[in-house]
Length: 385
Image 1 (cartoon, helix red, strand yellow):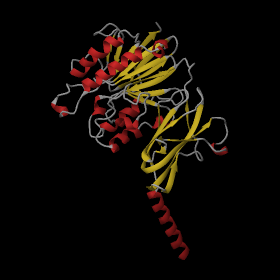
Image 2 (cartoon, rainbow, N blue to C red):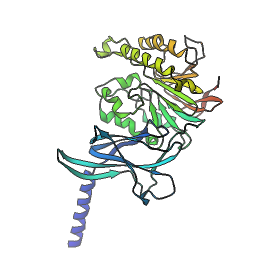
Image 3 (cartoon, one colour):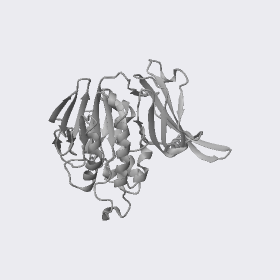
Image 4 (cartoon, helix red, strand yellow):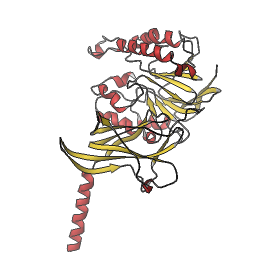
């Protein structure tokens, strides 16, 4: 009887310990992966001191030796918080990298004393460590998926992600309106939690007009890492230079819906000046292909946002040898051939019930548009010019 009571007490203590232990509630997920660097992000339920440990994919166990630790720091101090954004540097181009994330709860932080609680980490003991590949400058292919306008529909997202094959696709693009609005951290984290692939395959986010709405919208960039620190940026993968634009809101800034808080016109003007510099760069001109990704299309719509984007962006892009623009927003499929509606390049507006699988080589870009059942609805090929 006494032994039974002791065991019962031990199990109750263990249950209580587990219930209060620090937890990873979103992530880890990969952002802004380059040949020599990558950002690893995750969220814990309590503030923590966190780091990323990395190891080459050399066949040795992760515990074979001490692994390099990479921390997030602010002005020379560790960033103790719930949102962890660690830039891992000094990676080998074109290499497979194994990693784990570790967070130690900070119970109290004083000027000369820090009290720690429990820790949590991704598993490298019972499971294989998480793994990703850095791109190499000489890579001559890029394979990726594009989804947009999911609006928090996890079932639809799972259906459209079905063709995703780990190791086959280099990244995924979420082209805006993945949420209905951004009203709380909890709501936004529910969407991030659906991107289960992102611990080993990075994703790139193009902000949609619905990501700009809600009290939590100003926190948007806290959860992403881009080369510019803004929702508009560029990145190179294989033979393609990608330009990601943020079309802002779709209605006039003084529309009653925004209650005096919208300044998308100035924001788009700011991007246009940045865009001129990007397209004049040697890095842009040297790329074999150029693809522009933006949620709100600057064609095919007569609302204010698309019209203003058309006025500002198209004259610049029309001189930049763009091979393809990929958009969303309209919730329907529209394809404009080059020379249509003021654009000197083809514009593919993807629907909210289809996705794109894209493969780029040095010879061409092939786009497969597929529906919820995985069957092809349209295919396109863009040869190198």
